[in-house]
Length: 301
Image (cartoon, rainbow, N blue to C red):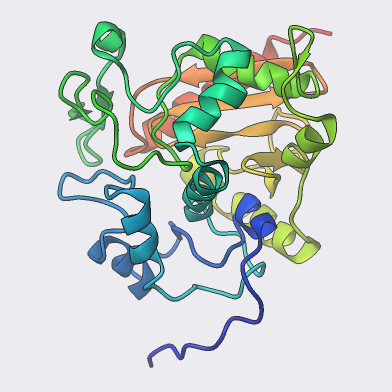
């Protein structure tokens, strides 16, 4: 039985984009659905080499995205990722700058994030390890994306709000430490305290929060603890129940290239693990889970 399209009940709001409830996204729990196929068929995501970030320029990407129906009504359901890319385009259009120029002026330079950007310059490329993707059947490591000549060696046509930034542990730490400090870095205010509070506290209504918490508990066998947070703020996960060692209130996110970064207001700590190993086998998730278990077991006060 085919799906029947209906009109949207209301326009998509900026808040919908900030909370990933705009009605369209990458539903990783339903990979065989028509809408997921359409995202790749129409070139919204993916290329022949399997790259999962937008390839066309922002205007063309928005045109392609606009040909697709929403998965659900705006504000109705949390769905990952696409809203972040739309936000990046929106920021660029509102400010009249490229997304990277805006981030550099407002975030990267004030925080001293000198090694963060949408590509790695030639004089720094030797510091970038290749991205590995273990074979899901054998576990054998393969280079998914080399450093020199790879996706990160030249500026992309699309500066993706949902991914694509290159960074270092030091730069990433500066950003999350600023959030822990309520928006202040070295005595300078980068973000307002209310903005940080909105980013780092749950913004989903009770029915959506219940669905995300249930998904985390039901899928624990897949992620070995990943996803055990429940809530979502503006652009990041927020722990609303204690499913492992991490306390309620911890905020951050995990990445498909084997990254995990969370800040813990209760213990005033930031944990960062950057593995450069794609999440193609359970081993990557196990390594991340072991990292957090070891970190929290080391706390003795």
